[in-house]
Length: 614
Image 1 (cartoon, helix red, strand yellow):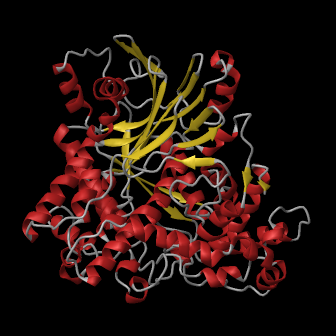
Image 2 (image 1 turned 90 degrees about the horizontal axis):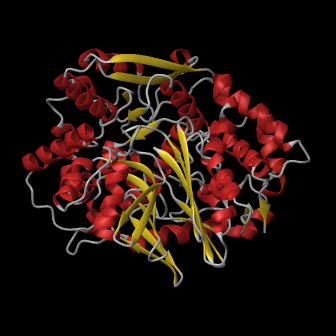
Image 3 (image 1 turned 60 degrees about the vertical axis):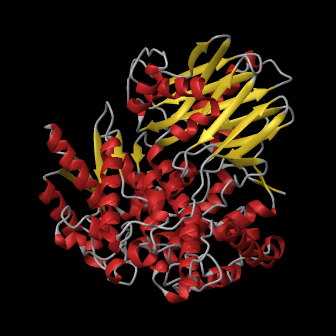
C-alpha cells in the first residue's frame, strides 16, 4: 500500500512546486515508509510514498509510460487481485511489461481501456492518472471504499491526496469547518457522511466513483453500484457459491513478496479467513501461517458477559490456531498504552474516531508490523451477511434512524445549547438517514419486511462498514501495515446482496447461510459461536483514566471544546461517577468510557489541526 498526492493547476507552472509536493508527501510517510517519488510538469504535479509489497525493483512510482503521442503518469495506492488475468489480456493486445507489479498492469490497463478499466479491476485501490496529451486527470476509488481518496476544488485547480492531513499540508488549504462540519463531528461521529471531508471545501471521492478533471471542469460518475434482482439459486447452490467466492477471495489476497499473516479473534469471520489461508499455505508447502490476536491487561479478571460481548476470545483463538497449525502470537495492551494512544489514533484518522477501539488497533498493528507487512482481516462479514444485532432486533429494524446510533437525545444533554441551535442535530441526522434510503436499489414485488431488511443492509454497507474500513485503513497504514479484507470482495458482496433474508438467516441463526457454507471448514465450536465484536478492554482502570483526562480538559479555560459542551452537566456526572452510557451509543462497543474518550479526541483534534469554526 502507499500514499498518493497531486495538484493540478491550469494557470500556474507547477514545475516549481517541488517543495509543496514534498510537504504533502511528508505527511504520508507512515503509509509509504519504503520509498518516495515525485513528478512535476507545467500543470500537473504528483507525489508518492511507497510501501513495498510486490516487485520491489519494478513497481516504483510515479510510473510513466507512453502510447503514441500520449504520456501517462500514474500514482496508485492499493492492490489488484486479478493482476495476472489482466496481464494476460494486455499481453494478447501487444503490450510488454518491464516488471511484475500490479502498478504497471494498472497503468497499462488505463492506456488500453481508459476510464473503463475500473470495471475490470478486482482489488482495493485509489489512483490518479495524468494524460499529458489530453491534459486530463482521472481519479478512481475501489467499489467498497477500502482505500481512501480526498480532493479539494480550488479556482483553476484541484488538489487530491490519500488522507486529509496531506491536503491540509497544502499552503492554499485552511482547516476550517462550518455548521455541517460540526454536525459531522458531534452528530454523525465517529461515522462520516459518504463523500464528506468534514473540513470545509474538502470532499471524499465516494466508493465506486471516478472523477475527471480538465480545463472544462470537474465531473464525477459512478461506475459501480449494488443492483437488486431476484435470487434464483437454491439453498445448496447458494452455500456452495458463497464458499467458492470466499475461498477464491482469500487465496487471491495472499499474493505478496513480503510476510503475510491473518488477524485472529477466534470468531466466525477471522477463523474463516485463517482457515482458508492456512490450508493454502499447507497446499503450497509454505511454513505455518502467522496469526495474531489482541487482548487487554486485566481482561481475564474484569470481563463480564453481556448482550454485545457474550464470551471472551482467548480460548477460541487457541482452538483455531491449534486446529490449523498456525504460528500464533497474542499481543496484550496495557491500560496506559490504550489511553496514551488515543491522540495518535486521532492523528492517524485526522478526525475524532472510535476512541480506544481505534487506539487498540493502532497498538495492535504496531506490533504486527514488526513481523509482517500484509495482514488479512475478517472485517465486513457482518455487514454483508447480516450479523449485527440490529439485523435481528425488532426495535432496531423498525427504528426511524440509523439502527446503530439511536442514543442521540442522551448525547445532546452534554452539548451546549448554542451548538444544538447551530447544527440542529436531530434534523441533520434525519436528513442523512432519509438521503440514504432514497438511494436504496429496490426490488419490485418484494415484501415490506424484505424491503426493510434490504434498507438495513444498504444503510450498514454505506455507513457502518465504511466507518470500520476507515478505521482499519488509517490505523494499519499509520504503521506501514497493509490490511486486506476478503469479505469486501465485490463479487461476494454482489452475490450476497440479493440472497433473501430467510436464506441468509438460515436455521434462525445470524449468518446462518455462511455457517452452512463453512460446515466442513471450521471446528463446530467456532462454527456455532455467537457473534462477538472486536475485543475491547473491560478494565475499570481505563474508564478511570479517561475520566481523569477529560476533567483536566473541561477545567482548562483554553480548551477549544468548551463552547460545544454543557460543561456543568458533564462535570457533575463525572464527579458522581455517572455511567453516561451503559449500553452502546454507537455500534456495539462504544459505551460510556468511549464517549468520554471521543470528547478527549475531539479536544485534541481542534488543537492539533488548529481548526477554525466559521
